[in-house]
Length: 375
Image 1 (tube, rainbow, N blue to C red):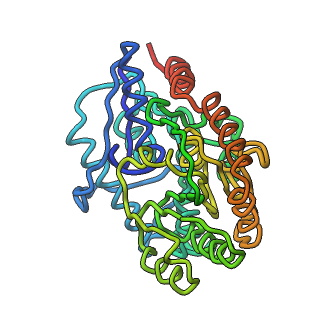
Image 2 (tube, rainbow, N blue to C red):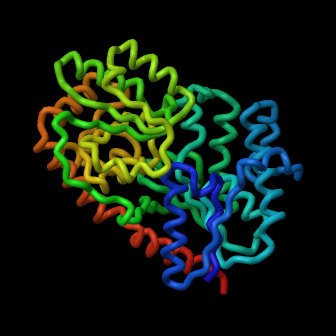
């Protein structure tokens, strides 16, 4: 069987889907399936000019919106690049971005095209203060989900909570399948270590949606309570300078190390003790699974896919979104109790090993591909 994995970002980009798809390809090749990865290079901009039409709504009523115009141009560019580069046929195409899904079905109408929707672009824009829920761009982006349902042969998403979110914008929510992300366990090697001062790590793109402002405030309170710790922040983004300034104002700059972007953070994560990310939204939250596989104690917000990964008090701690006192208390509980954080870390590792294997994803996708293939 010949499968095309149609991505948007290149595989080397950080993030759950970009890091997972190459491992999917590798594992399918082991069982003799032919699989290719396709994506739009960053340098391809404003090349496409083909007119765009949707079957379920009129996009031109949103035409004057800058975000909508950019999205439409990206569809045109993806179409241009696909026509230029893909000349062969496939048994199934698996898209990993709405633009990829729509373009592939348009250009390969007789080929089954399924899509995994990994996250919500409109939620990202909302939480990062780029748009409002009343904006034309929000209405346009949420209309895309119904368009995908109309054209494509199957929709997959990464958590039950995100399926519930999508259900507001499609006609048949029961047709959406949930497949949790899977990981190659060989990438993660827990290491026995004894840190006299607790080492806390947060790994994400530095944007408002990740709630790092809340984390810095919690760390400031933790310091006021007399606790020693080091917070390692791995990642880069538009608010890095703002976060560094906030750390200075909160008098916790000396306790924090800003690393910037790191290509293979899983090589360093096992040396830390606590993973924390107070996100304001997560469809799944791949970094929590990765931290669990590195055998760290987890602290996250009680939303989305994070709440499906963490059983509060058993394999991690959950706190409400934007709740500085609750986050401070959760971190304090782990900082002062090495035995408790080791227990939580061990439980997190066991759950991740049992539920997030790449072999489980391969078996689930294999069934979906076989059910969709047209002989």
